[in-house]
Length: 71
Image (cartoon, rainbow, N blue to C red; front, side):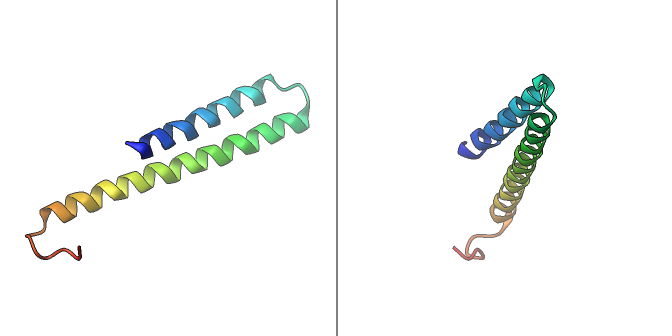
């Protein structure tokens, strides 16, 4: 599923930014990496929520009798 690949990409980038922040010796670089980690984590959270809602909608649609969907 493409969306889970996207989610994993976001999680990987957040981890990479966290590691870079831990390794940074300059405070401005460390701060930049922490902001980057927060942004990637937020993107991952949104992607996970979107996927959850997509699955819920598919389950709801599958539970409806034929002919009652808007498709």
